[in-house]
Length: 124
Image (cartoon, rainbow, N blue to C red; front, side, top):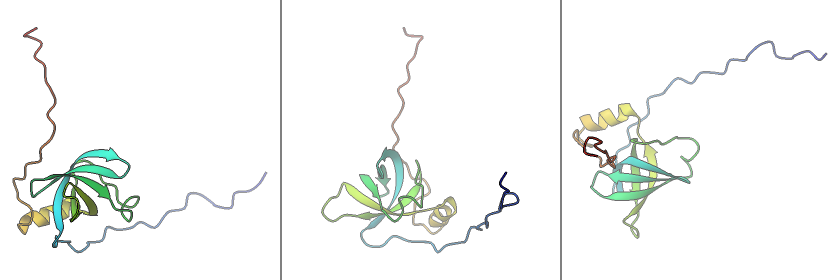
């Protein structure tokens, strides 16, 4: 019977979360909130300038950063297509709080979400 070369489970080096530099928007960029995941690296975004856009997750972020519903992201706008954009950075909750403190994102932002239809069975 072959002997096991490893004597138990090896512990992987734990990565401690490092504080990264806060990324602000530049010209041609906008803050947005993910409202719907569409698949194939695409999602529906509500940009904070009031426009609903289709966002494409950049190849550099695709398998390294997982983007989910109601995440705050930084998008790069396209000059030739106003209804499409590219997601270039995802913010953590702490970074979103810092952006709100610095006045970059409004505190009372309203994200339009699809309302579920409710039925009143007493009327039937």
